[in-house]
Image (tube, rainbow, N blue to C red):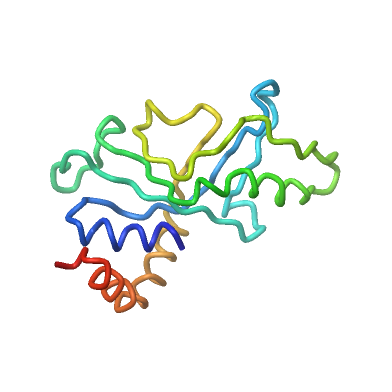
Length: 156
């Protein structure tokens, strides 16, 4: 997973990051503000999306940083168009299929932005349960992350 590997490398470089798991919303057509693709672990289809949160300032102990003090990092942004094209073929009962045309132009190779600079056609919403589950799973692979950091020089 991009987020877990990215977290390992950025932590090795001394960055204050954590993985977040939750819902990804993408608006494929800027001309239709009602059409959104939703990947949400709460919908029961087994979809998750993971990204990183980077703290620009260390928050007080026990406090969450304010939105202005964090950056969102999504290393899988290059796949947004493909997510839309593949997942929009899944249509819940009673709903009409949506047109599978991406009209947002080119997607970035990665996303790294403050909340204020996130494109308006992207939405990220964290879900605590899936985040904990992913981190528990990633902890089981900590030796792989350590070796990757060592190999790429981040662990030095």
